[in-house]
Image (tube, rainbow, N blue to C red; front, side, top):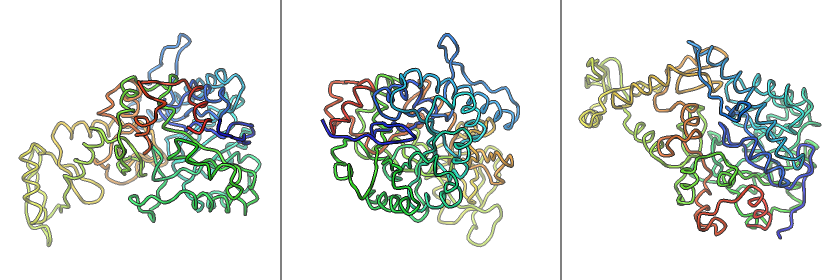
Length: 464
């Protein structure tokens, strides 16, 4: 047995093993409760959680509002009820062992009313809030209001320092831990800055060490750091464990819990995971959040890549640099393109990509008429699932970002809801960490074996 000392995380003595919070129904009360019952810190997602009736039947979210604002309000009300349901399930399944976190994204639509609405009814059932995807300055204030711990997710010491100086220094007694999420290796949305090269992953050790030094300078020596992203076998991290330089430390697992008996993903999805190979996860910037994210290379990602590849600069008027007139769309409306680009445009049109859609960057993409209609429909049906969306130009503070909607992106709510409700795993967004190929190489999963959460935690504790 690999020796693991417990850590004090969000006020609980737990194994230094944390379930990563995956939104839109992937980390739920069942998975979180099982992880906690195994002695770790379970995490259910408050991001578009699922709600069920008294008979265990899923309550679908059906929008009746005619405006985005009305649908946004409906989304918030459903999210609160669903979050409460998942908190209750997690608490019951945990048997009061381990600990329970609720995970939210700071850039999700209505994050503050959703979080407060859940905690008002279910705050006594959870021990802490994990939160990333943005700069959650008000996270500490909300946690303190409900007297529970907060655990920010950051990708650099600089980000934590900014959060601490602006807000967290006033609520240090409720800081339960800090998650360092490797922006090159973690699944889902990633915190790469504009100064960091997405093609050149950095060694996480000096970055975590710098985070620890910043925390120590703030008097946070006893607050654990949680390493997230790229964690599979603990034996690969033996130099980190009980490392006095790093201080109290835990490890977060986001991808491995996907393949458990309790995991709510479809059987098709579970069968797909062991077939993935190194390089099958793409770090991309298609997300409507504007952040980088890591997802499996499938038909969905391939179509987004091809859509962006069929892109040209244009001018509405004939001018220097844009001398060539091009009539596009069913109405033959003219745009002007560069002389060296006209052959590409004509080739795409001949291939059936006859419709052009304008982007916020003074470019056009070429798509089929059917795809143009689907994109336009998704933009119209926006329900404000993000605080600001580049795809639909929704902004919850002002109604609109003021920018042209970006057709190179997609409706993230639609695709994530579809894949968790047994939609196609090829034609939807499938988030995963870059180590997902390990399912096919790890003998633990040989012959199609799918462990329970308890069995997975026990396996992790051996170092494997």
